[in-house]
Image 1 (cartoon, rainbow, N blue to C red):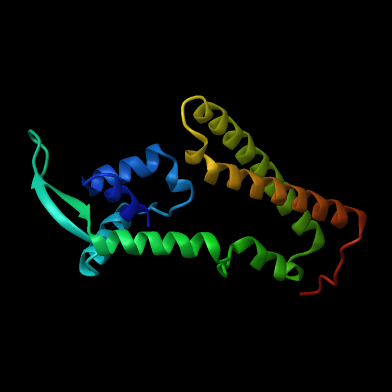
Image 2: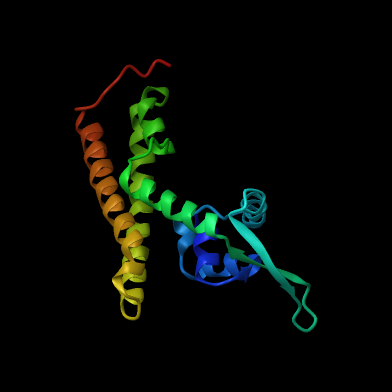
Length: 180
């Protein structure tokens, strides 16, 4: 989706796509941690006819770069993916709820300590996100910030939940036999 969206803006090469994803903080919502993942995605999109090679270019002493563009099929596929992703909740399997499902593997004091660490990390993430939203909000229209607003809402909800669970553990309202 990210690659299709970028080449839909204008034809570009893979390195530029990766730069834009990072510059726009889209790597907060799209996993491009591995440099190779953009190239693998491009290969798959090429194979499926969703993008095409526009040409190659070379600047000064830089290596030759292939420039890609969106095909008509790619544009329609992107629009369909977006409609589906916006309208239909997906079954996702994040790690944290999985860990919550198996709390009795640890002793209550270990869980409490881990939750306190998580709370500190969540607070730091929230502070960082608030700073980014404030800074970006000075020059970007809101439409470019809505995913960060959503991330903030989810982060606040998680903070509230983890804080309440840690309080319940501390007060003995959540207990289990820690004989595992």
